[in-house]
Amino acid sequence: MFHLFQHTYNRMELPENILVLIEKYQTGTITPEEKLLLDEWYHSFNDSKAELMASGNESEQQLADRVRGRLLETISTGKQMVSGRRRKWQIPVAAACILLVLFSSGMYLLFSTRHPRQETAKASTEVKLKNDIAPGGNKAVLTLSNGATILLDSASVGTITRQGNINVQKLANGLVAYDINDKQAIQSDHVSYNVITTPRGGQYQITLADGTKVWLNAASSIRFPVAFTGKERKVEITGEAYFEVAPNKDMPFKVEANFSEIEVLGTHFSINAYSDEASIKTTLLEGKVKIAVPAMGISQSPRFLLPGQQADINKEGKISVMDDADTEAAVAWMHGYFQFKNADLQSILRQIARWYDVDVEYNGKVNLHFTGQLTRNDNVSKVFKELALTGEVHFRIDGKRIIVSP
Image 1 (spheres, helix red, strand yellow):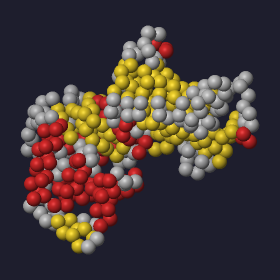
Image 2: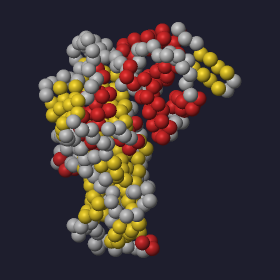
Image 3: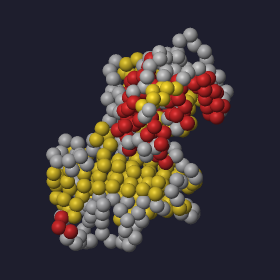
Image 4: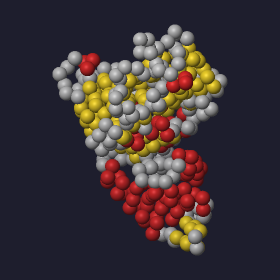
């Protein structure tokens, strides 16, 4: 739901249910399921006539002003019909109005390059493929303290295993929860650790013994005690994870990610600590966290994050804090989306590679930046079709390889 249309459509009336969904989207009351329906309707509307705006000489604001101007011209040529409580918009008025709603709400996809756009007789939006690739899903492996492994996606609903006073259960919704059996006291002289690992093309959610909820993105892992004892709750992650930490002021919650350490009492935050990314990013949605890099052995005071801020830790361990972080983008993967703002193509393709379990190869230099949102629920060919709409980048799918060329 992020194309900018420039074409005139046959006049037709929008269904009432679509108008309701558009209104909900504009007011921020739309549910993820309704958002998906609106997205599917928008794409089926007239997908073959989509044309993206691209220019290397314009800023995002200049491009936005130019597109709005064109849409307003389209609106001025049409009429709006209102009949009682049933509102019926005609095309092209409806198309233009929807675009303005989507554009002003950030649901768009813009392209900017470092060179002027090359005019072509026909923009190539075809994605060449030998076989398509389905999106990822709920997949993970549980490794017990004794080394035994359990495939969580194929395990039956109910108790998976029992470790001391802890029952490990797979719930009806497919997720895993660690429950204290009979609420008996946990002895602190021996602590067992488990690891949950998601492969490329997988994601999973777990509820720890203290009630903390953890979402794991693709190619990620979490190592945690089956029960928390002592004066703190500590876990280790690789990859990307989102936490909703159960409050306990007497037992701080700590997350170790590579060489960084995040300490919280009770909060919601996301950590991106993939080894192939340039830095570790911690984005705070709620509460307060303390960021430190004790493993680097450098003299640097811890930094504290407030909601809406993001900490960036580079490879040398230097911490920088950004205000007004894009919190929606940080957790978009949990809601079934890739979301980005002025992101280079390489970083976007790293996300896609993890989710679709593919390898990316570059046949030539491609210098493109994108702002927008893509669904994670489509086959990979449709995702690449969207990215190829500028005509300045081309994709070829060969088995599990994605070949990218200018």
